[in-house]
Length: 576
Image (cartoon, rainbow, N blue to C red; front, top):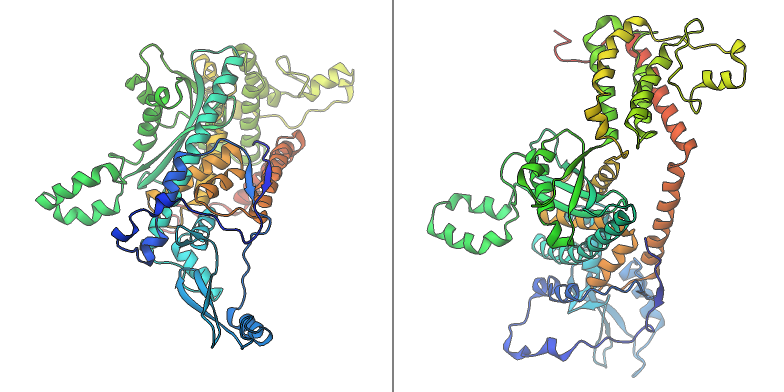
């Protein structure tokens, strides 16, 4: 997140003059109606083409909105003021409401009316209508939510669906432009950091997909690629199997009207994926690899995947680069999860392994965490990685009579520490792993410590950043609410900008939308970025990690005790 320089704006009351070029041939054009005026995207498209690279922000400290009771406030004001010209009583009225914008009329019985807009105009459209749509999208709320909010706040009905769709399209132009700029900067940063680490063939990226619905029946999905060294998004792709317009024209399929319509619709169709929902991630990653040279003038030389999909096979088969074979790297978090999954499945399939003193939920968690730590602590040595994996298992087998700590490291093994301090006489082992459990889990350890697998774990790569990004997207376009591809595009764009550059990137989007930037928005963005950094640093501390691990372990141990005490209470056919 870059430092932002704040520049205060012009004095309140000054007017901006639009270029006369925008007003040419006015007499030859039909006047726009209220809906066309509010949904005019011309200014956003023009601004998007000339996006400034400057980090300066134009903040107007005199700008801001307030919610007031119009009738009550202006009724009192009218009792205390008179017309400046004729000293007559004046009244205030509302006129020409468009969404949340309207005109305030100052009426005098003897003088011409004075009309004041309730807010700034953006090309004859009220700024407040753009602002509320963007603001609500930032909290994951669509038109129905805006209508409900306005109803209970006793505000006028904001906008209609057609107008809302136009505003969302307008916002999409702005967010797409800022996202594109962010991706460019992130890719160049990743390239520079990669070269500083002595790698010149290309950059390493982690990829992961996410869907709106589980079970691979989703109509929408999103996939991201994140640079390993920078931790920033370098590309993102939204996939859709649904287009509302296509759905409406289905009835006219195989007609001349349909063929004529589709000629103009093909380039703007919202459906950009054919096939199963599960294949969205595969296709998206392949597309992003193939466009890396055109988009960033670089290659993705290594791919960090989770092994849960055929994504890497798809990359290899598609041959994105003639002179480079993409290398596969394993996400160590996903590899660690395999250990936990295998142990839990073993416990379910073997009745004699569960219960106290055997393969409990707490023990499974401990073995899984130790396995993951063994990989993380030895990112540069295959032998050291494999040695520590087995060390964690033998450590659990050790007893006072038969200590098996030859492979253990004194950095985490209390027996080794006691040996170094010459206090083994007073050292006592905890209850060991039974031989029965050891023989049952040994094949799992042998399989998950294969050279072929651990070689792909060298480097300590993870997809944690991708999963964090996915959560950010679905916060902006909640899975519990229905929305189309354009809304998901906006959510992905905003999530990318915030993920890479912080909340202050939202202000750049607002600038493209020609919105006024006030102190409240500026302060919120800068304070949010500061809190984000502080929170991230706190979460990375050893104490925080240990606390989270202890809480999770204690909770699962308690759940295991409840399960043993109560027996199975939920499952398929259990009531039969």
